Every structure is written in C-alpha cells, then in structure tokens.
Image (cartoon, rainbow, N blue to C red; front, side, top):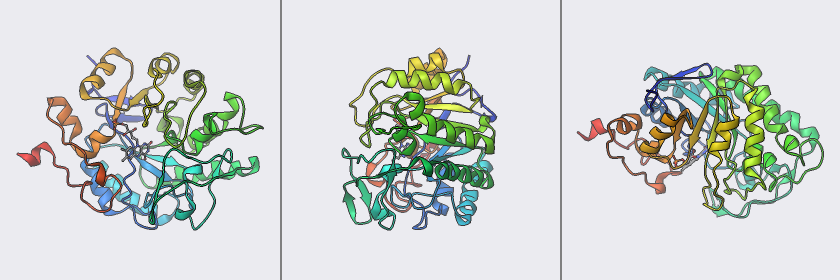
Amino acid sequence: MTDLFSPLKLGAIEISNRVLMAPLTRCRADEHHVPTDLMAEHYGQRASGGLLIAEATMAMEGNSAFWREPGIYSDAQVDSWKKVTDAVHANGGKIVLQIWHGGRACHPALNDGKQPVAPSAIAITNVDVHTPEGKQNYTVPRALDDAEIPAIIDGFVRAAENAKRAGFDGVEVHGANGYLLDQFLRDGANHREGPYGGSLENRARLLLEVIEAVSQVWGADRVGVRLSPLNSFNSMKDSDPIGLMTWLSQKLSDYGLAYLHLMRADFLGEQQMDVVTPTREHYKGHLIVNMGYSGQEAQQVIETGLADAVAFGVPFIANPDLPHRLKIGAELNQADPATFYSQGREGYNDYPTLEALK
Ligand SMILES: Cc1cc2nc3c(=O)[nH]c(=O)nc-3n(C[C@H](O)[C@H](O)[C@H](O)COP(=O)(O)O)c2cc1C
C-alpha cells in the first residue's frame, strides 16, 4: 500500500518518503543575504524529510521583504548555499530552493529607500512589515511597466542558474502568499490592462513565463510551483479561487513539472473553500498539499490519492526528525513563534530529536 513513507519520483527528483519540509523563512542569513553555517546545520538536521523546500530566497538584488532573508544572486551566496546542499546530501536528503520576488511586500526601509514594484499601485494594508527599526506599514508600490517584465523573468533565470551551481536538486517557483507572481495572478492585486492584466490567461502570463524560462535551465521535471489561492495574507484576494485553480491546473498539466504545491487554506482564516479536490481533479502531475496537516490526515490523503505528498511547516520547525516521529506516532515538540524570525541558534537548531531526548 502506498503510504506517507513510500518513496516517490517527483519528476526527476527521487524522494525516499512523502513527508516534505515546507519553505520557511527564518531570517538567519547575514546582512548581505548570504546563508550562514547555522542554515547548513538547520537543513542538514532535517535531511530525513523526503524533500526539503528551502525558504523564500531573493532571486534579484534589492528586493528584500524580510530582514536577513537569503538571496541567490551573488557568488558569495552561491558558495554558502553549497554548504547547505552539501549538508543535506551528506545526510541522504534532497533539497530544492524556493526562488522569489517579493513585489509590493518589499519595503523601502529594507532596500535603501527604493519603492517596491507590483502589477498595480495598491499597497498591502492587512499586515505590517518587520524592519530593523521595528514594525512598519507597507508603502504604495509602483506599477511595473510591461517593458520591465523581461528583466524580472531574466532575474528568475539567473537565480535558477545559480541554484544549479549551488548544488540544489531543483527549484520551486514561489507563486504564493501575496508576493510578486501571486500579485499578478489574483485579481484583487492586479488591476492592470494589457498583456499582464484582466483575463485569467493574462494574469497568469508572468507566472507561466517564469516557469517556462526556469524550465529551460533545469528541465521542467526539476521545477515545482507553489500556489495559495485562498491566502488573504498580504491583502490578497481572488474573485474566483476555484476557477483560478481549475484553469491553472489544466494549463500546468502540460508542463511536465516536478510538482504543483498547493496551500489549502488562509493564514488569516478569512477565505475557506475546498481547492484541493478541483486541483486534484484537473492537475495531471504530482500534487503536494500543505497547511494544517497532522500525520494522521497526511496519511489519509496519500492513501486516498487526494495528494502525492504533504509538506509540513511549523511541525518541521520544532521536529528535525519529523518523518520518524510521524511513523512511530511519537509526540511532537511544540514550536515557539517568538524565535521564528529571531537571530541565532535558539529556536532554530536546538529542537531535540527523539534520540537526543533518550
Ligand atoms: C515562520 C514561517 C515562515 C514561512 N516562510 C515561508 C516561505 O519562505 N515561503 C512560503 O512559501 N511559505 C512560507 N511559510 C508558510 C509555510 O510554508 C506553510 O505553508 C505554513 O506554515 C502552513 O503549513 P503548516 O500548517 O504545516 O505549518 C512560512 C510559515 C512560517 C510559520
């Protein structure tokens, strides 16, 4: 019987089990967005996950949306990511990198005063941004000119090339959580006219162009994409999330991707509907689901075929040996939100394995 602990081939990426680590921004890079040794230790500790999806990583310089998140545009960053991928591979794991542009979530206070860009000049109003000077409101972004879009796609291509040099097993295009590609996708944030606004086909154009371009670098079977059609975090909303997922699932079925990674819910709990069933129905490739899964529910979705793998976020923060714990039904360590975005080892690399607790 296929279960949570059965191996799987996600495109060209062979994984040993279906307990995946969701991408988790933890702000442990240095002030130049260069990954640190702490990060190599962190991902190395979690290598028993079938696939680790490394945190949102700036594809292009000057688009910081957090404090000390990593980038993949400089040689120093590539060299340091190599330590991360080496640590994971040395422990028998697989790791892909989530490549990202924050769009309107990039704050001037984090980018030398530079105004952020977005599909339309509409600010985020329902959450604050963390800056070195404390929490601040988001600012109104500048609407990108169509002529600027090729440079954005090019930035993703450079990031994909650099991820390859850094020894990753593939890349995940970040199309979720209200960042640039998602801002284009969902009609609450995209009020454009022209080739990148209006119809669903136009709103999806940038995401699909990025996926196509990145697939030229890696082969589509080492490229995944993450979507969050219901997440209202970062002031996001779509007028028809099911229609969006149905259309995109059909479209992406032709791409031969490693996987489609679907977040089923809303960080803020405002939008609730079943997006997993229509996605499974219309998407022909491998489907990863995420958000709020227990080990038991994850096992059920694999057994019933509703999804092929399940990504765990917060449970993986606190349990470096999560697959083992889920397999034997052991109690889980609880994560401490106070250290999610703090500095240093505490709340990052000091969560014990079951073995260490003996
Ligand atoms: C501290 C933290 C950082 C996160 N960073 C990212 C990120 O970099 N990229 C992303 O797509 N999602 C990010 N997420 C969302 C998680 O990947 C995941 O979707 C969320 O935690 C829900 O899954 P869970 O219920 O298994 O925790 C983050 C969530 C948390 C709590």
